[in-house]
Amino acid sequence: MHEMSIAQGIMDVVKQEMTKNKMKVLLKVKIRAGKLNAIVPEALQVCFDMLLQDTPWPGAMLEIETIPIKLKCPKCSQEFLPEDQEYMGSIIQAPCPNCGTDIGHEIVSGKELLIEYIEAE
Ligand SMILES: [Zn+2]
Image (cartoon, rainbow, N blue to C red; front, side):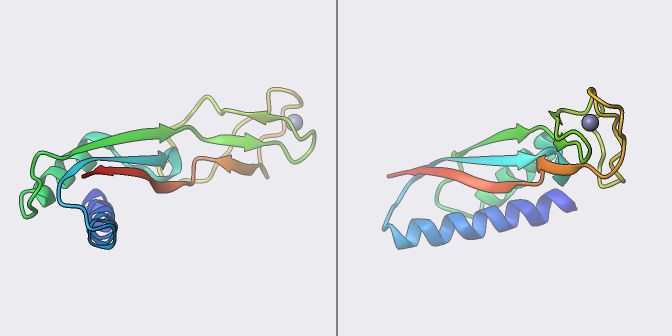
């Protein structure tokens, strides 16, 4: 499952950080996930909770902030949020609200997938 490999990746980084900073108890992990990663937050949450069962901190929380897809028009440089945010890996085609151009847009945001911070003690 897509979400399981992502949860595993998050967990690997969290464990490294915990060791590096000599922290004992993980409280919370906050991640930012762009819409283009096609992550289902509920599924990622379930996978993360499963992985937590094999750690010393089964009660840690995962907070997922979803970042919307934002595009920049190649003709008029207008930045906009396309109405359809559910691309799930398909080709992006969305009309620019200013001039109507619907292909060739630059992706301003929506691709990011990162750990914003880890709360631990
Ligand atoms: Zn435009």
